[in-house]
Image (cartoon, rainbow, N blue to C red; front, side, top):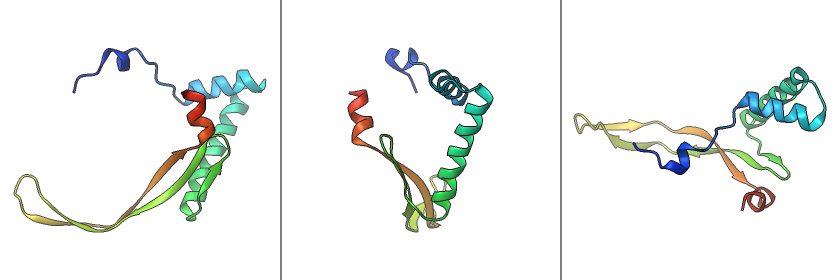
Length: 102
């Protein structure tokens, strides 16, 4: 799959970049900022595991979506297979976030 030149030039922000940014903006040490980010992520995961929506004002809503069981086909053999039901996380950006990037 080819990437456009626009995609190639964009820097991906990772966890370390976020920790550095939090540290700079808050005046906290990088280790304290890293712990705060880690606890935020664990709290989001815990809320989702309990079946709750996690709403962060100005960012958006994290929720668990249920995918029903379906029938599919093995692409190699064409044989029908049953795909079991599953749950997956979904994120919906808030209007504030959408407005900030447009």
